[in-house]
Amino acid sequence: ARAALERDTVTLGICYGMQLLGLAEGATLFQDLPSECPGIQEHRGGVRHPVRAERGTKLAAFVEVAPFDVTSRHHQALASCPDGWRVSARDEEGLIEAIEHPGRTFVHGVQWHPELSPPGQPDERLFRAFVRAAGERRRPKTAFTELEPTSR
Image (cartoon, rainbow, N blue to C red; front, side):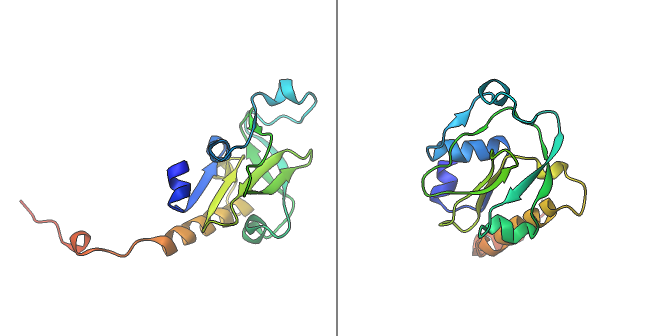
């Protein structure tokens, strides 16, 4: 995670990937939501619940709607946002659901599982933004990579 951040690698951290990005940069973690946050809504087992992208964030520009439903499968979550990062989405109870690094090309973390959302959901626009950013950052081909493999 630290190496990817140092290189400004286009990154989308999903669930534990978001937690890893946050922890690598100094965030704190709720180790177990049900015991540390009694009464909080369930986030395990593929439950669908709404999140709201924060105004002015890159995430809000990507998904273009607020709130929108996401699929969660976690019992841990970031308790704080690392310095230099921005919370880009929260759930109805204020739990951090997404973070982004405004100083990087494309570094986002989402606590939910966008790959489990039905087709046509806002998550699809997030994936498209990720793919577009990766395509724009692709390194130019070198003479070595342009060589055709020889047949043997």
